[in-house]
Amino acid sequence: MSLEFSLNTLGAMLKVLPVTLSLTALSFAASLVLAIAIAVIDYFRVPVLRQVCAVYVSFFRGTPLIPQLFLLYFGIPTFIASLRDIPAFTVCVAGLTLNSAAYMKEVVRGSLLSVSEGQKEAALAHGMTPVQTMFRIVLPQATRVAVPSLFNNLVDIVKGTSMAFTIGVIEITATASLRASVTFNYFEAYMVLMLLYWVIILILERLEAVVEKRLAVGYNR
Amino acid sequence: MKNVSQSGIIDRQRGRQMIKIQNLHKHFGSLEVLKGIDLEIEKGEVVAVIGSSGTGKSTLLRCMNYLETPDEGRITIGEITVTAGKASKKEIHELRKHSAMIFQNFNLFSNKDVLHNVMEPLISAKKMKKDEAERIAVQYLEKVGMAKKLTQYPVTLSGGQQQRVAIARSMATEPNVLLFDEPTSALDPEWVQEVLEVIRKLARAHFTMIIVTHEMQFAKEVADRVIFMDGGRIVEEGPAKEVLENPKEERTREFLKISGRKSADGESVVIKKSRNFKDMLPMFIEAGLEFKPDDPDPEGLLVCFEMLDKESGRRIGGGSLAKAYGEFLIRSVAVEEAYQGKGLGKKLLEYMIGEAKEWDAKRLLLTAKVPGFYKKLGFEVIPREDAPPISDCTSCPRFHNGCDSEIMRLEL
Ligand SMILES: Nc1ncnc2c1ncn2[C@@H]1O[C@H](COP(=O)(O)OP(=O)(O)O)[C@@H](O)[C@H]1O
Ligand SMILES: [Mg+2]
Image (cartoon, rainbow over all chains, first blue to last red; front, side):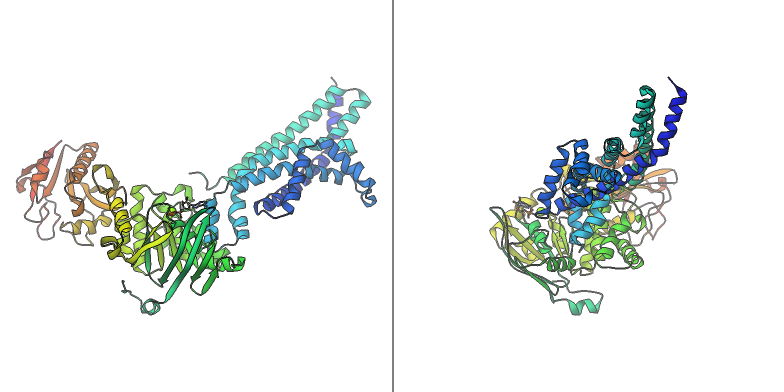
């Protein structure tokens, strides 16, 4: 065990930690928006779009993340030349977004359905439009229901960002494996890497507890 | 039809047609639920809709605000008319703004506190500014006695309180008509009365209302007109008293007979403890006790007992327990005339004696005009000189209920 190597590796990883974190944040935000959009399309039974979304969801849930990233990064630009110059980071955000939105859509849909029919009827029966009902009554309540599962999706995205190195994004996993293969200190490199992921996720879990507590206001006696 | 009102403006507007329903039909799959409903309602009219369950009462109300889409017919509320099959989204939205519905299960918005439940439709549907919406919301919450709970969330409220907030929410939008779908059916018996009382107040103020209800007594009391529905049709309609007391149709008679069968006995009442002596005063006065409507609570009042009819939630009797001058006193026991002779008085008194024991009472005193009833429960008449100097009566300073009553005692 080399403590010096471990500390050096940790230092190098912390330098690229912003890459991992921004991949996570951007992918999560984008997939949340996409998931809500698909769930709302589903909820209002918008013709055509609904079927298109269903195929997309099924396809991205039915295939692994790495081939999805490869298809986006290497495959598609062979047909569309203008996509060739898009940086790997951006493609990675797109891949993670498409992948996790396919899962999050189910979470969002379930949470929308968890809001009682009666409350929606009450909103309509007092002259609110379906869109107002959605944004002012349904979504706020659905958020509370969705939050625990969405944090699971967020954790999956954090771990999913480790796939970014396969298309050449230098984030923490890439840094660890580069250093390990140069010095053969595999144990230290991957142990430090895993501990770093663990700490990130522990912090997210604390955050979740805080968010859930704030959202619970009014729902408990 | 009642035509008394404090406000001349309302009177002038009354009698104008507010709602017109023509030939309304509704199917669910192959089930024909509404088979051609025709109905006209005037401004300020209170209409009760009665009938067995499954006859389409809720569906009728829900078609009026397009929570269900009717197959055929025309609905007019105020100045807007919507024809089934030809209604645009905009027309439906417009129609909905002309009514407001009070549901069996209240359906308050659980992400909003009391104040914001009432403000929400004002802000989103009526496009009011926040401060104006708040002012109006508070004003209507005051009318239903919920203005003290503005920041509470629905889960923290009793069913009765939730329903009162729901009524305030509906009233605040100032709709042309209030649609009540069995507003007390989901309530525990002890909360029914407070909700009915709010609706009674609305009836007195001549809000236009359609009330689907199983409370026949209540319907008789507040409705101008009663509609009896059966099998998706209006079978009989007319002035409330006429339909409920002298129905013309055989089916109406049959229905009323069945729904009246469950009359009160020991099993069908509950006793609720409270401190609402003031609320019970009218009942005591009605029962012949010597009170005036603005009398203060009895001296040393510990607890009131309200006897409620389980079915309707109506207060049909009550009494109170007080402690003054070191003595425990049972005061003002009464049971409504229609409910007498069923052992309810005995049930009430036994309950009160039990409660007195809980307070560690060694003996109980009361006054009675008919001592025989209390003697059966173990009370004995004692001389006035032995009684404590407390008075129910304004004319003489004695513990009595009218000068011709006996003072009685029970050792516990
Ligand atoms: N959404 C629905 N889908 C199918 N059937 C329904 C629906 N709503 C009500 N019904 C049926 O329509 C009939 C009338 O129901 P309803 O109007 O609720 O009666 P009521 O309020 O008089 O008890 C019942 O047989 C009921 O089962
Ligand atoms: Mg019903």
